Image 1 (cartoon, helix red, strand yellow):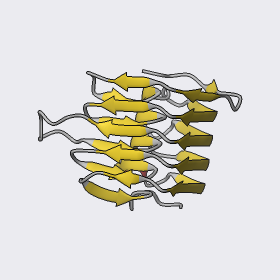
Image 2: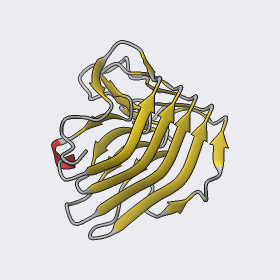
Image 3: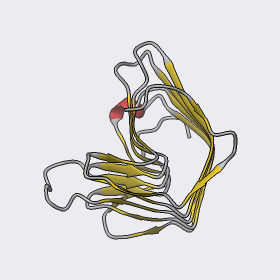
Image 4: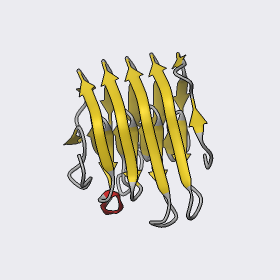
Amino acid sequence: TFYGNFDGNGVTIYNIYTKSGYAYGGLFPLVKPQSAGELTIKNVNVSASYFGGYHNAGALIGLADAPDTSTKLFIENIIVKNSYVYDNNDTNPATQRTAGVVVGNLSHNASVLNNIFASGNEISAQGILGGLFGNTSAYASASTVSNAISIGTAVEPASVSGTVSDKVANV
């Protein structure tokens, strides 16, 4: 679980291969800000990489979660290119399975996502998938997404949520 802040300083992280045997897959498999705090992930480029997780998978974050509504999550200046993201849970159809190019599941209230670019990626899920986010929960309704685009994302059969789920209020 990642609780801190991360500034990638614009460096490109490439050729990462993770086939998680755990619930979440991504550069940051599980992100969870501390109570009444903020967490920022910014200035990160991910390229030519492979991320998998049992329940939620994203190239940057598998699951963005929060302990309560007083926490804030900032994701800004992110580029994901030519990567493959998949939810590899074909053994337990009763669980939620999501994959998104940037975030597998955004279950965090009051998230701010700004300057997000995704291009040439492929995603696959047994459940829900999307071009930027695989799924968002009802808790993400106060989130804001601006200057975000996903171009040329190829998807394998699943329930497609589009670029951003309908539960994010400010797009």
